Length: 86
Ligand code: HEC
Image 1 (cartoon, rainbow, N blue to C red):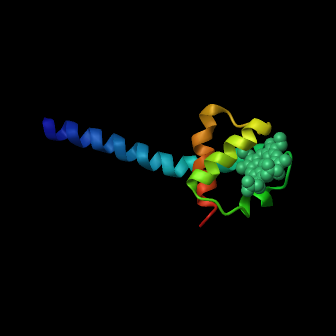
Image 2 (cartoon, rainbow, N blue to C red):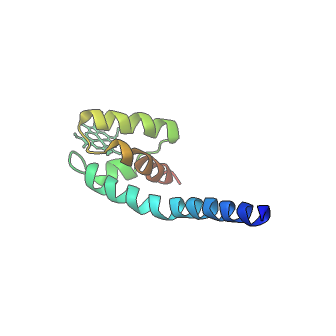
């Protein structure tokens, strides 16, 4: 009984983990493609070489300038931006 509960809990956790990696990136990319191209081209974003902390600072600076990224979209956007450095 305990074993099957532990198995279910870990399956749910694993599923959530996979769902996050599978879905967060396209969602983040779509938001960036929309919200980050109204003032400058997408190259300004995709050519930037930044680590995670620098992206956070830049993203918040762009939001202050007027980038339309909702608070609940911020994590997905940051996750996508961090993949650009590789
Ligand atoms: C309201 C207009 C506007 C929007 C929307 C906007 N930007 Fe910018 N961005 C600017 C301006 C102006 C500059 C150049 C001046 C500066 O760097 O502050 C810039 C410069 C940049 C730079 C180069 C400078 C640096 O710090 O490396 C990056 C990278 C960047 N933006 C990323 C983004 C991202 C990511 C988004 C979407 C979340 C975004 N921008 C949306 C106005 C905007």
